[in-house]
Image: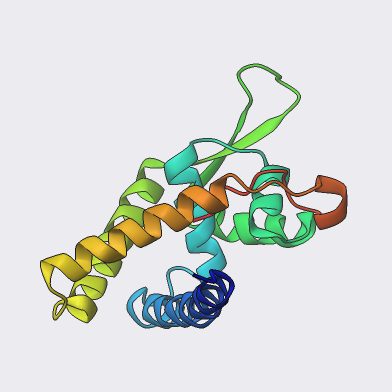
Length: 163
């Protein structure tokens, strides 16, 4: 059996579905965050929630934005008491960013609302369909997590750990 058409069909499905899901989730975030978060701020908070403290340049690389853009984004989160700057415990010259307790609570609440909305959207799926989707996303995540790109060519970290 020729696998090429199947692989191409899979690539087309990913190209179609992933951006659509992203748009839906961004729209949901705008509607239900009551202006508390922009999508990039939510992504920064998600990254800090999952990964712990990070320096500004790591966050800029993660989101694919410039340092000044990331600095402005983080300043907005800091002004609302959601993110705090501290000295790195290893290198005191380095400043790291972390969620405050309020930031953790706000992020967790928004995450719960997003999960509730997703459950509403997919509630007609059978148990078998849900299991199939979970397997497919886990497989895709495993494959993509192993990709490496030259840092110089892409301007991004060698291995991409984005959600």
